[in-house]
Image: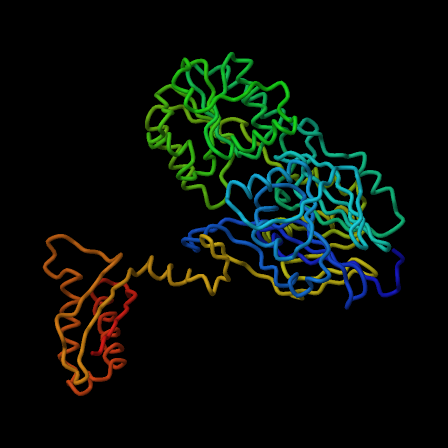
Length: 559
């Protein structure tokens, strides 16, 4: 495709820039009013305590919907939830293809089947080192080491300019089960000075000095911990970390132990890995019902629950509620992971339950049993020297990570560094320009089967209920304002102290009765006036008694 004087290459982050998770970005090429767009990644983040009842949080695709006719495709860098978890919820509406590696394709298919998703997307297979064309873009996936198979950076080439979108990566010289980052190809890209090059780069560990520990070092420690254990060993880790699964399996084999697997996600992902030939030489894993038949010193349990999920295997084992598996004093549990921010309390609670029962709990605080899949500062510097970017845009991080990454890039001599956030538009070509807040962005909530905006979700009401409980009052009046029968009341989530002479129920009943009596019969003929008076009276009296303002709902029925 020939270039024209009006052609521009622009970058629009729609999620993941200024936050961890929910990664989604758009690249546009062409004249400002006729751009063609590709989308890179479509991820989720997990709801916290401020979003009670919400399952997942997704990026708002309104900007893409406004340009739907010009959106060409979605390209997935890898299949972690924060990069691909929203595909089946958001992408079917665009009716455009998804480009993904074999592993990511299998993960999408398995997700669709396991969650009973009816929607369908067209998936086109891509492979590292094999470029393909989408409209005015040529996309070349480049293999990078990460904590999941087949992670890719993307070289995005247009007639006028290029961008390297790193996705999640690290420079691990000795990864397990996957190829190392393709340093040779990255160096070749840097040597090509034919068109300007932007680097859109992972900032997760930009605050950490040095280089990230290798998976090989973790594997060595796991081998030692498993070999030295006198009794059972359980290992919990991220189910998608196939390299870690391989390390545990190899360590178990060397120690003369068999691997029992517990947890649907582990079974699903290890099954995908085996089908794709990633577990060659690894014996089949035993199912959890085999656990009790194996001698204590001859078993390694690989289980889900590293993030404290209440229904996952390690949590049920810690509570002594697992139907097939139990651990005893002297057994060892290795948390080959670290807690994602927001999950710390749940993880610590599980660890404490195990410790109270005499189980030896090993975490990254006591031994190197986990490592990151993201680059530290020395790795970022190495990437700069390889790629030689004209422009750096830090992404994939909160404000502190992004600003530390930006400062590092400037200190290493990168000419242009853009401090972008979600909703900004950054023009890479013909000249670098930054347009803050240019496009609409935001969040969507997945609440059960309903996808909605935060305002539509009812989460504010749930938060109010969690702090103040609910008091509901039902009163029946005739058209003359006379009270028909005793008012009905229901109280939820408010304190009721036994043997308290002035209980909440008695207080509410007394307030309702007194308020009704204080209103003349003729005025009680107005249901809205009665409703307002009762609501205020109950809220104020209970507030004075309790010290909290409850959520009060009054129903006035007129017959």
